[in-house]
Amino acid sequence: MPDNFRFNDLRHTGNTLAADTGAKLKDLMVRAGQSSERAQLIYQHSTAKHQRKLAQGIDAEVRQQLRESADERRRTMDA
Image 1 (cartoon, one colour):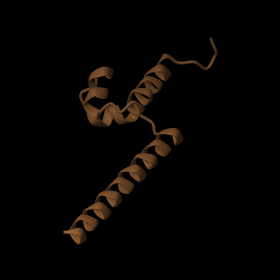
Image 2 (cartoon, rainbow, N blue to C red; image 1 turned 180 degrees about the vertical axis):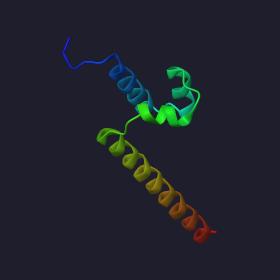
Image 3 (spheres, rainbow, N blue to C red; image 1 turned 30 degrees about the vertical axis):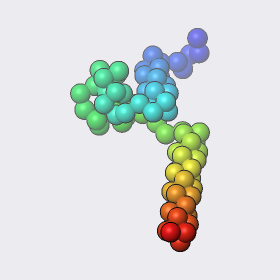
Image 4 (cartoon, rainbow, N blue to C red; image 1 turned 90 degrees about the vertical axis):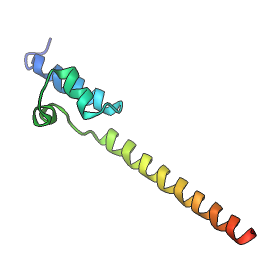
């Protein structure tokens, strides 16, 4: 085990991984045994990988809404 390892690091890692799976704040608080949102946010970190995943999800949602809007306009024009 590395000399700089701290068991508290596991709490940070576990919370970050759980958040990356889509866990809600309340779920994370229950898992960590915390009663305040502020305490939970100390142990939750954002990663570049998760930021890319969020951006991809937003992009997919916008593209879907644009397709639906275009389909609706075509239906309106055909009617």
